[in-house]
Length: 209
Image (cartoon, rainbow, N blue to C red; front, side, top):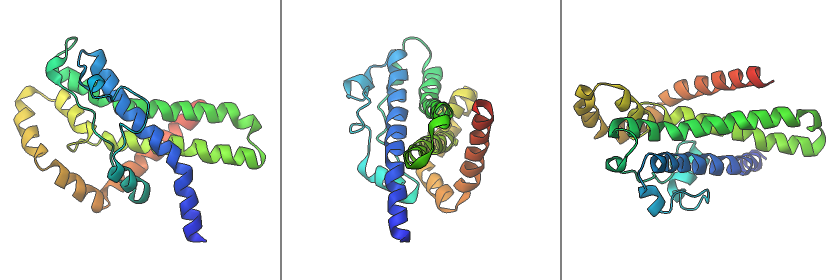
């Protein structure tokens, strides 16, 4: 019974995970394109078709272990024409988490608009589909804003800090994957993501409901 319930939970979360990852990566590519870099466009990544964005291993890891990844969108900061390389990378990095926050907020608005008619079995099914859209996107946004390479937060931090700190950031980046793995396996991520998701969810709920 527990296995069946867990499988059902995964299936219910599946659309939210696909939407969250796809829109996150699309936002990176679209932001880079707007700033003058067409690398993502030529790579076929300016699309809302999930297939070019999903990494099979990363997707399965996210489904079953709540830690995964999509295919990174290729970005060439040398192609930025509207802003400097540093500012451009900051904006491109922010675009993904901002998109996830937007989807979470839009899903909360949808839940509010539909709340008068969400009753019975059909209403319960809709709620089960909408709630993961909120929580999954909040998890993706907050997790990616953690300033550990190669997460988006490290690029945002690099864009904010003075140029003199950049060599230090580069040296940390070499060990970023190892640091991130320790961060996740040590359960430290839960102490950041859990409270963060709860806080933002509560704020959205109070604002919208």
